Image 1 (tube, rainbow, N blue to C red):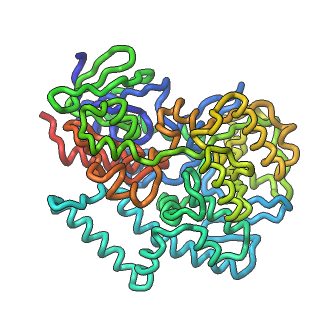
Image 2 (image 1 turned 135 degrees about the horizontal axis):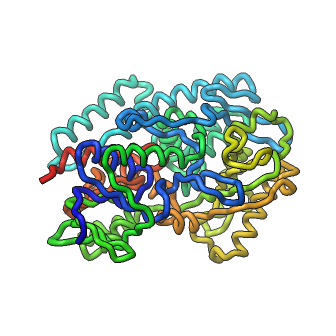
Image 3 (image 1 turned 135 degrees about the vertical axis):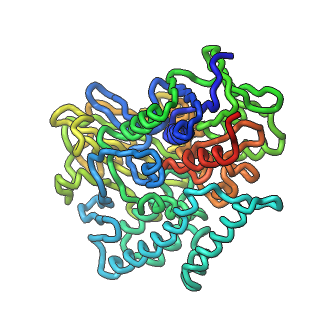
Length: 515
């Protein structure tokens, strides 16, 4: 083997970079190996057409944890902060949501939405505290620290007060559809809130746990949406700079073929090119399935554990659509300044549920739902002068399309998506000079994420907190000595937050000593 390191991190996604940087800051000799030619994982900025650049997968920043930026002294320049949301209506009578305020709805909905947000942000703040801690073990041999964390969680829930505690426990496993239909008269408001609860998931508004996924979204700065200058790649480039400043070595274009196991413990890695690197610890930023089933190999871990990993639910259902435009499209009832905000096409919660129905059977939605941004409106580095980029998340687009993702299937869905958008932006087709569709299968291939699922596994109660990624392996250490996980498949989950990477680094520093 070649030069020896204290730790090798597999993957230079944002969590891998956070973990590596913190380990390097603590004096560890760290090597990061990234399969792609640039750092960032799914949070990269790249050109998709001549002169047009876009945040490839993740495209808005709203979950980056303050503990991460503080620990690393990270500063992120924003092209746009506090994006509002415009829930589009085909007749131009849109609903606008800005933080705790909503307009375009009746007075009762305005008051009800404020009450709803107040309660949900309080519950999200409770949740946020535990996103930035190692989840406690639920076992007979749980440590004193685990028991204290559990006790604190119980105390914090009780501190909500009797009424709110009961409401929290009632809501946490519920579906968002029941809550929005009970609270709001406006179809567009119900649709927009429902959409935020299911964004990036294989869930519909009627699915259990969608209030929890809504709370998880709010736990990132109350879902205060921001657009980094230069796209999401500027965030991960800043993280890579921090890592290098802390002594970390980063090598790109180095795809790891396997994690080397010697004498029952992880001892290094071998790359596709045949290079080997030795280390005391290996930390994988890859998803749990890729790590255990492919890099480690099922023969090196206990059969029951591999079975649990195999059954992690991680079917991607969201695609990215990038359009190069020769100018901004026309949207009835929208002022030009509002192109700096986020647009949502989700006319009501029933529409969103019907869109999900197709994905259950391996079909693309006949009427998909959208999150749309025009990042070049505030950041002219992303498109030629006077021209623009549209970046849209499209749901529901199944990872396993029943007839397979051929070029014909991709072209057909791209046309369907553009036709749907044209109902709200009639001149859009004439504005398009180039397009790109990334299906979940493309996301898997380009960003090495099993199933093309952003979160490396569905965020549901049986894959959350104490049971993420699986029971018995939720504290970042895997049942193979010397192997840890630090990616979105671990607690707390996905989104560009850095919490999983930070938590993993802290767990490693607490448990492992350099010898």
